[in-house]
Length: 321
Ligand SMILES: Nc1ncnc2c1ncn2[C@@H]1O[C@H](COP(=O)(O)OP(=O)(O)OP(=O)(O)O)[C@@H](O)[C@H]1O
Ligand SMILES: [Mg+2]
Image (cartoon, rainbow, N blue to C red; front, side, top):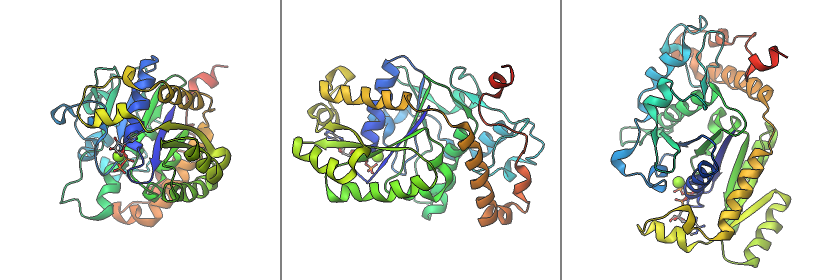
C-alpha cells in the first residue's frame, strides 16, 4: 500500500511521514519511506545522521532506468525512458517482500526501527528551476510504477509542499493521500485545491489535522472540511523535544497521538487496491507527457512504449484462479 503525505509548507508532512513510517514498521509490515521533497528532511526526522543517508535516486536516474527497463523491447534505451514510461513485458518489477533487487539494495538504508529510507536527493544551487526538481522526483514515479506492493507492505512518501505535486502523475500513484492541515484558514486552503484536483482522478484523500490545541481547533477543521477529516494529532511536546535534539522513540509520543497514527494505518489498510486505475492513469499520464515534451526531447514516439497486453498488479495470482 502506498501513501503520500501532502499539505501546506510547515504543516507537518515530514514529521507525520516519519512518525507514520515508524509506527507502521513497529506493527511489523515492511516499510519504505521516501523523501520526495525539495527540502530533504525525512532522514533527520527518522533519526538518521546526514552521513547515514542513502544514495540519492535523483542523481542516478540512468542506472535506475537501465535496471527497470530490463529487456522490454519497447524501450530502446535508458535515455528513451522518461519518468512516465510504464512497465511492459520484459520490464523488471520490484517487490517489498523481496527487497534484494539493486534498486532497494542500492538506494535505501535501514533505520534502527527496521524501516528503509530512500531519497530523491538534495536540490543544489545548480538545479535551476522546477524542471530539475521534477526530473529528480521522477525517480519516485518510476519506482512506484514498477512496484508490486500488496496488503501489509507499505511505501510512505513525504511530498513537496502545496499543490506542486500535480505537475506530474505522481499524485495518482497512491492508495491513499493524507493531507496534513493545521487548523487555520491557510491550512485548509491547500485542502480545497487538492480535493478538487484529486476528485477528478478518483484519488482518495483524507485530512489529518495537526498541531491541534483543543476542541475549538477540531471544530474549526470539522466545519471547514466536513467528513474528509479523518483524525487529528495534538500539538506534541514529545515532537518539540525531538526537534530540540532530545532522543525520541515512539514510546515518548502522547497516547492520543499514537492512537491517531493507528487510525491512519487502519484507514490505509481499509483501502482496496485499484490496479486498474493505476494502469489506466499510468498510460494517460505517459501519453500526456510524451506529447508535452518527451517525444521532442527523446526524438521518439513514446506512445509506442505502451504495452497494450501488460496488466498492472499481481497478474500471476489472477491468472491462476
Ligand atoms: N504535532 C506536532 N506537534 C508539535 N510540533 C509539530 C507537530 N507537527 C509538526 N511539528 C513541528 O512543525 C514544524 C514543521 O513540521 P514539518 O517539517 O514536519 O512540516 P513540513 O510540512 O514537512 O514542512 P515543509 O513544507 O517545510 O517540508 C517542525 O518544527 C515540527 O517539529
Ligand atoms: Mg517537510
